[in-house]
Image (cartoon, rainbow, N blue to C red; front, side, top):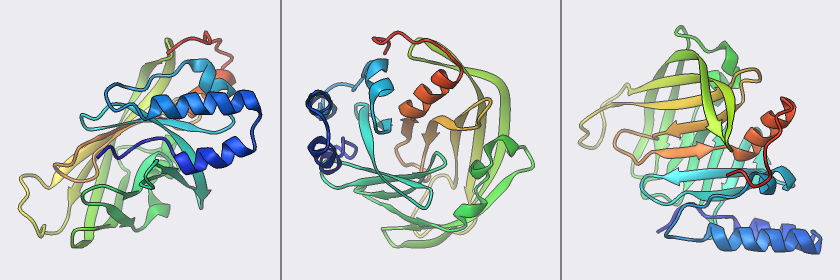
Length: 236
């Protein structure tokens, strides 16, 4: 099953309130986003002209897809798929899923996540929370420590974006209910150097799980515009 696809229900609502040109743009977007055999890659101009935010997502070996933002609730961004699966992010971190084989149901202590104040993250930062999983794993205590690499850059749409690379090392603090070969794993977040906004992330929700590769393309566009960087409309 393809987990992450463009939110059809959300797009239907947008189409009803959009002009004809926008309708055709979204219709084309929906068609290409449902491609199951190749990565979805759209030109810069599409995102620069869009009224709504978009996210590139690659889950394990599945093709890259583009998701439209459906809802914002209490700092949580909800990206809904065509078959009503859901990916929820908060300050760039995945905090809930719906539609995986073993969904992440809940994280506690979200207000203490260092990603809330990303430019303050240092080697002294730590983050402790409990995770609830669909397959009978509740109250799993996860502890994170961080390392920071300054002076990094990303190549996006053919342009260079200065970033801060944050590596998060995570560890289960309690014994698993299932056999695991490793109780530790890591995430990586790339923050735009001035604003601290997460523009890219690689996240593994638990040991052994397929990683999610996220590119917050609409945020990337905003950062280029704020920096006065001219990007060719056709850039991919």
